Image 1: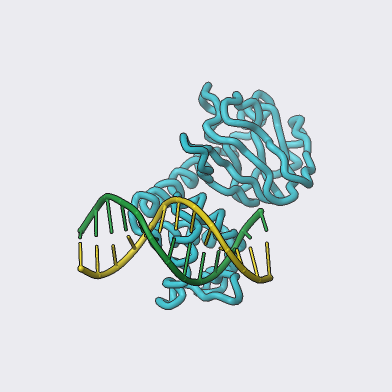
Image 2: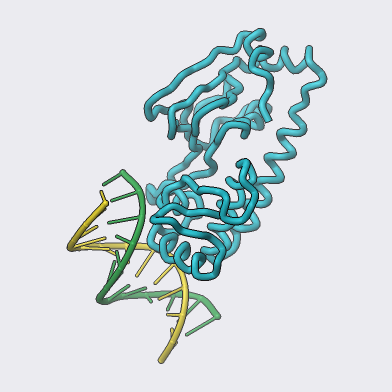
Length: 196
DNA sequence: CCATTAACGCGAG
DNA sequence: CTCGCGTTAATGG
């Protein structure tokens, strides 16, 4: 769900084109903007006490960004880093609130509810100790935002390493589990590409 | 850089 | 004891 970009521009938003790996904001920064991603891919991550990367989520177009963080005076709990060349629409916080107050038909409630719902779904699987449940949770999450809902129709273009960082399990376990899942006809593999 | 495999340790059940 | 996951190292893409 994205807000009409022209509306955003009319309230002072600007477009950023980012080609390379770059940090949008860092853990500890204060939120001053609302971001929307019409194109590209961004990861929100955090490093645990051992330096292991934890990917909180990977943002793709139509998944609006850290909007929930606008409403609190807290610092970002995560880093935002560009994974694929991105088009980012950035609008200052106060301009964004002016936009909302003058366009009462736009409500962030829907966004927030949807994100919260997704987070709950992810939590269900992340709490599981079983690696296959965790991986399936991540796969479902991404598939739900794709145009491919048929079994095996969704090409998972995430590396095993990213799946590992998202689910908190090791890459070797991801590999072992994915293979097992293929035997159980949960996923299909072509070379190394995962179809779910 | 990432994926795969094997060998080993170790804790949980 | 057995099983599964993490770790390490080696190999190859």
